[in-house]
Image 1 (spheres, rainbow, N blue to C red):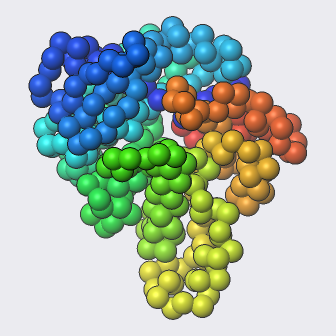
Image 2 (cartoon, rainbow, N blue to C red):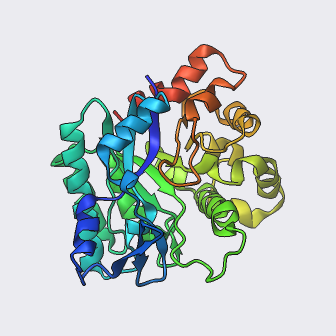
Length: 325
């Protein structure tokens, strides 16, 4: 079974409220070249094309890509950590309720990842509990930072403790709250996104996160950003710099083996390296659909790997069935 675990969604109810002129969402809808975009009050500007919320269209795209099932997660700008606690909770509940409705209506095609208002950790925990216990959602997507603070901060430990207790799969996605006004070469996506993932993961490795939460299931987007490919440097630093090992008992190469990763690297040679480093059991196929930077043929990407058919099946879907379903 081919499962895309990295597929983004924007709630139609959110778009509908913006079209109706809602003033409580800290955003407005803008039309350019016959396409809709969301302009947030914090400066974020991102597409709201129909394919973000058209479920029939998503199913058709899945058919074309030979995808049997997708796990829907909200487009990261809608994390809304920068807004008031009331607005971020309102948007999170809107997202989760609509995703629940979609999964209930199309159970053969979709599962969901919840989103939570991490700008208030207590509210985030309550919304996680509601998503799991009332909506039956078994995964959550979170951003790498909350108002400039890395999620590796002790401030967020109660949230991870609850996620571990509920056996929730945690998907960490890069989240740039503010982008440069001029990004001539789109480096905010090419460079900053994978850097944010690498920075967050490195902090998890060196601050003893794995030792503190040994049973947590946590996955990093875009193949872990830049970090897996510099693991030797991290090991060397751990050996030679006492400050680097003051909070962690595990070598970086041992700690990283506890994490999960999506396959979204775009180059089968790089992905092959990641599989050899981490193992096929910890890699899951992801496309990043329907963003422009998505993998248009994720199944083909996996099939190119010089792996056994059993290893490929794990990456294409079996790992998701085991860890999220």
